[in-house]
Image (cartoon, rainbow, N blue to C red):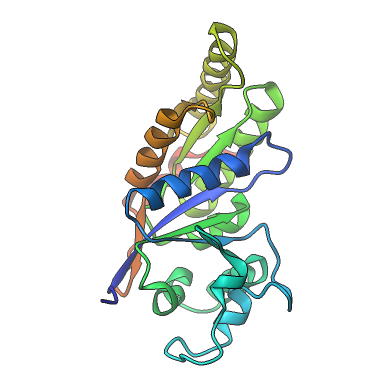
Length: 247
């Protein structure tokens, strides 16, 4: 039965992050194994005539049965829909229309249990303004990864007033890789305390461990928001102007 609300999750797309997108797909696959029908709108993949996606879907009436997207062509066990242009279009509409941008997606995806947005931090910041979603950032455990993840968290905080869940990758076995991940998270937390009011959540992830992926999938799910006719701004958004400083 179609739902009046749809749970929405978000994951930040970051270039040159080692294994980041693979980890996100694994997490989504874990959620699907738990029994949640998952559809991913991939803002890092552009729609084309050969790989239709969100942009093509938005051009159709949501109740139209014929001529819809052939998910069999663009999805396997996990429905991943190219959405670069479609999400950009929603963000542009949000600048002039009073309607929350993600509310437009509900008629198209209400049959799914979870909608996952995978896009850049600046785009997610524009799209998530009326949700309680805490976007996931998969971080490389090195100085470049810390800086990139801090910039993503800052962008989300400034534009949407939302905190992020940052998962530092543990690359390898033993105490050394775990220690590097913990140090990287401590550095990020110090930066967030100093410049973002401390509003981030952190954890570690060893993608080769099934139990770790399942744990992070559950944490990801706990940070879901929702879209529907009664979308309202998160209370924290109203305080962000006082807690976030430019850096």
